[in-house]
Length: 290
Image (tube, rainbow, N blue to C red; front, side, top):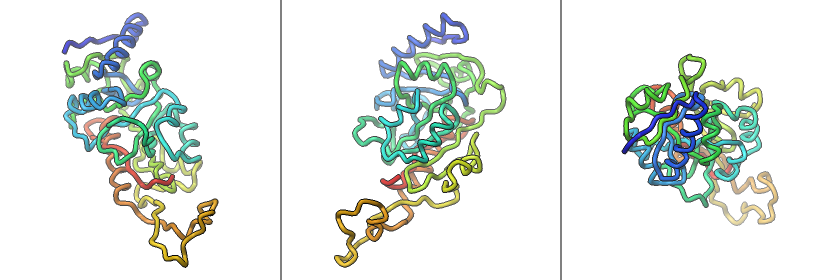
């Protein structure tokens, strides 16, 4: 595969690079783009072939599915279900920015990001070049632009030294993070359970989130989910129950191993996509309730 690099600090090359990247994404190829943390390798989130190409370029398996970057908060509604008011509050405050939210994925979507356990990790990056690209391509599966186990790339040239011609287009936007400091990963919040749960602290601390959402859980607390209990006829709730409280006898709060596994994978996949030399898996599934 031939590969092309564009210096996107130049207006003319920026326009050419975005156009070429859009065509590459449509052709199920992968590209390298800057984000607000480090450089990422990106593919069409709705193309199983493209996502497989991304994972192969990194040398990563399906057990570490990539997070999905979106251009605006509104896109979240079409990709996720059971979005709680608390999750919306966090998105409205911190997007675009270093916050990754794990949701239950829309069951009607025909995508295959890997072993996600029915969840999806979403983020709106605080990087104008990334947002411009996402606006014309739609949601992108994005992981750190490096081979698994190698340092994350802070420039397109660093990414090219590792990924070479497995990538169609390299968009060079300067060093990331722009300040020149060490990359700080996004904070990952699992929003698939009864309460929000910070599964990885990054640029946003648990304490800061607690100021907005006092009920948020830390990573050291087991996820909480609603699970149906075996009922006898005597304690079966009325079918007309109009609230969770009405149906309480039919529910109990308990831990979900599958949900926990999903969250841990999301954290691993996320780490790998944003920080040096760590691999970050995909979303964790706590339950079908939010």
